[in-house]
Image (tube, rainbow, N blue to C red; front, side):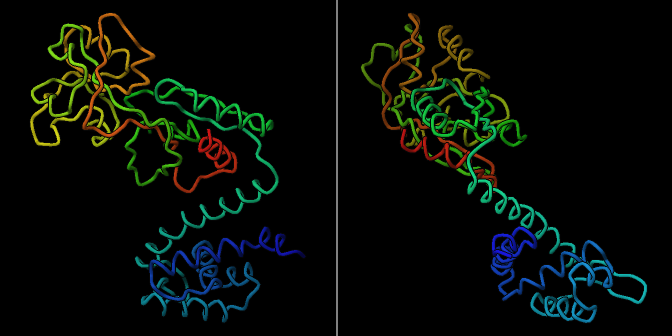
Length: 320
């Protein structure tokens, strides 16, 4: 039997990585077999059945469990002649262990799929308008991976992450910043300067450029909805870097709603240069804005779910 077949049959690779993971958390040299024994016993709650599943003697199961308990520093099971049950420590340990074990099994499966080929379907959500960089990446990916179809979804401007967390899409192209613990930030692209979109009647409309400190006392239109606060404050800050107040204006769900409110003199809005160029209107002026970071997009996905197709698309996006 080859080593690859052994990994497929008994999950040794998963357990090896898992042992390293638990080792970091509990700062002990945990043996792979001890962890495997713990997981099976937590399922069976019976030493005899655990021994049968692991092809070990009951005494060996007891030895492995005792060794693990010594390393951790407390009992993981309550054992009597009639029953076996997890202790509070054992339940906490199992709660931490289970998701990691499932995720690592997925890692092995994804690696196996990647070794074969990139195939299936990749669902990409886009916040805002699909630009040339994304289209070039999609085209390059499809030409090199004809067995994997990219399905495009439009994401709400005011909700960049919910569809990703629900599993409706495999990855999302969203405006920075992205600081979510459960999401990975991949390639960053489409870095362009910011502009200030104002009505042609606005007091700043005639200025060739505007500094962020000039926004003191102005009203900015922002986004409503479930987007995190730090993200919404980046799109519509409430103070300048020097600490001057910027008034909060109405909140919108879509960029089109924002343009309508700008034209109605309800406030100004931060808009990246590329988006401003694609949405020119006679009643709105976009003024170059200095003193703020460039606007940028990033590909993001759920942590621990980097499929071969997603990894391949991210590589295309890096070089697009």
